[in-house]
Length: 137
Ligand SMILES: [Zn+2]
Ligand SMILES: [Zn+2]
Ligand SMILES: [Zn+2]
Image (cartoon, rainbow, N blue to C red; front, side, top):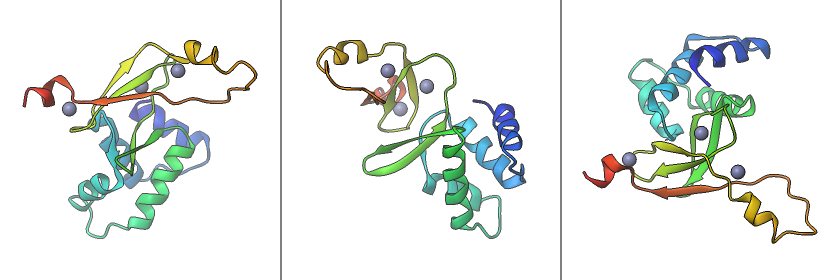
């Protein structure tokens, strides 16, 4: 997902592309990794006089519903990033800077063998640690 696709996706679903929505998407596009609502609010407060936490949370929820943003829980807190729309993959997530690296390997083929009589509906697989930059810092 990039900014242009996200804007079109909003319009296609009947949502207005406001300056604030653009800025939020811009923030996540530049971030290139997971960020919290708090990170976004800190950023927005530099650009707007009155930042409504309600509006921010509602937009984060909306973007997640529309698959513009992906959501995960890290250290007990919700984190968001721009959605990936290409082929199925998983993520390595840096515990320090939130950067992600795509892993084009899915362990489900192995897991499915242990779930013979079960119907698998979804799965989540994430690896956490330190990216090379944070590791050498
Ligand atoms: Zn991805
Ligand atoms: Zn890092
Ligand atoms: Zn998978």
